[in-house]
Image 1 (cartoon, rainbow, N blue to C red):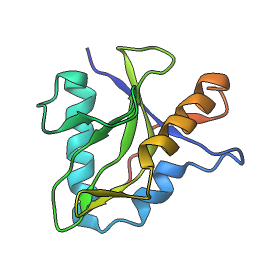
Image 2 (image 1 turned 90 degrees about the vertical axis):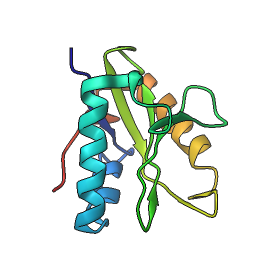
Image 3 (image 1 turned 45 degrees about the vertical axis):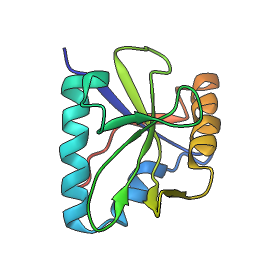
Image 4 (image 1 turned 135 degrees about the vertical axis):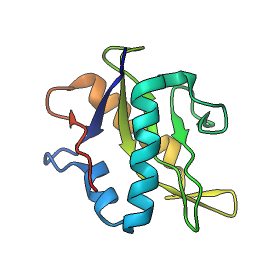
Length: 129
């Protein structure tokens, strides 16, 4: 059964993940979309090098290789665990360090905001080609 994807929205309703994705080059968006398609089909069963944990429990990163190492931060659920994922923050990795700094902690803050108000703090994932 496919997994549903959602994008985090800030307090003004701005889709933060969509905004990050539109700034990517078309080749990077293609790689991102391919990994998101895999996530929708396989969920947490993705190969270990594709979906990995972070230092913050409950926050994962999707690993997308390229000239820029994309590391979108996401969580299982948090409303319907095991059936959905919420894309919380776009990040990149440079020299084994995440940008923005503390991306996993920022993503965890976003996750908690979604848990408190999932009707306003997330929307269906919007694919950007």
